Length: 385
Image 1 (cartoon, rainbow, N blue to C red):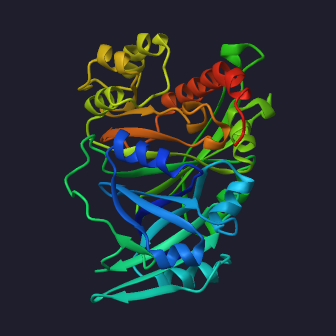
Image 2 (image 1 turned 90 degrees about the vertical axis):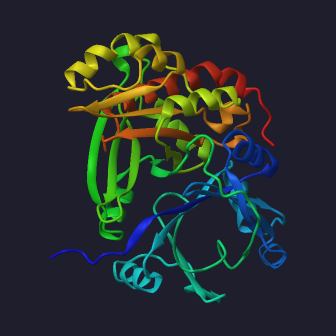
């Protein structure tokens, strides 16, 4: 018997708790050309003790929240964790229907359905707890609603396209010590299905000093929403960068969000000129790329390999469908500050390939491992604010 649909439509937004809202503003507005589209109303700030700003690029929206009082939800989160994702939000056709289905499957709903009617439009939303540490999932229905949410006021902004081509959220990746509880929850409560699995270890590169991971991607076939989920792999389980993320984040959480665009070469070139920093990739990756593309029957690369090498962009695909991707540095390494958190962004462009890049997945893992090893001494000396 087919599972009853939740009525998911896509990603709505992801929400951060941060110590430094001005640094976030500079990163999103100045580095990535996100537009400030909404901010907390004074009544909401007074009631909640925190201030939120909403930044948008295409359909990708980020909510940045800074505590104004010690009793706020953001302040409580930041006492237990570094800056990071507190909530993932999804748009739905009918929030009341989604709530009913989730409750029937055992979801833990955190509050009654929030509703608002304004200017002929309506808004409904609710949140549930998840096995992913303290990360909440929020389900939002808007029909001709003029605001981002009832607690926000709109900010006049330029509606022109993002100048770097950022269009929407492609997928979310999370790290945890053990995937099984989260995968079972995604399957039996949210109704997601398995999409892709991979596991590997870098011991072959580091001879007793490497580490590994297991990863499973879950998805909702109706909306196309995808979650990649990672856990450490033995041997050296505790040394895995997945275990390190969980330690640095003080629990399981969202490791990165992938932002989709059409042309990664021009985007990365322009972002580098704008001061955005990315993880490096060894030259051997590009030396082996022609052979790997031939093995995977990709003969139609639009991008020149030497250009990809110069910009450190990764490629993967199969049967003349491929994707390009690159990863920014995690915030803690970027700012040399542990409390900035281990979250980072991926940028991705797809030319017909829906996968996650098996070869690139390992290349990313190896790049983060090298970056963390190189930076660990300096980061260990940074004060925790």
